[in-house]
Amino acid sequence: MKTRLLPTITGFLLLAGTGVAAAEDIVITPEQDTVIREYVVKEHVEPVAPPPDFDVTVGATVPEAVEIRPLNVPQVETRYDYVILDNRTVLVDPGTRRIVHIIGSEE
Image (cartoon, rainbow, N blue to C red):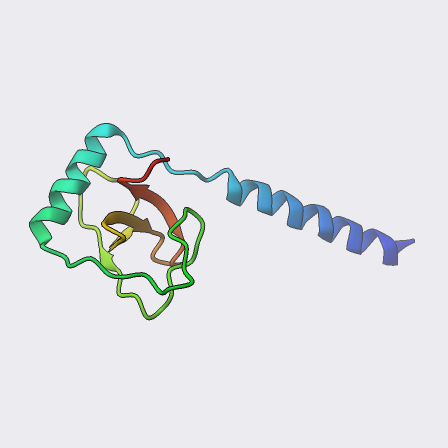
């Protein structure tokens, strides 16, 4: 009985963790959006061409070959990195390199 219970509990915990991770959508206010756009323009960062097989979508992991930069904007409380891909500012979780928000997309 115990041998069946452990895998079942583990499965439920994994599913619960997935639901929590999916629920962590970030919200960028219009004011923060404007401040981020101004910051990126001021920094004169060149756009990067994404690898041919890479889709620029929320949740995708930015390849290691793509340089991401720190986003130093006090109005955005959570720390993100960013990169400009396909002429869109892409906010990236620095720990996982996952895209968390795209500015200038048709979301």
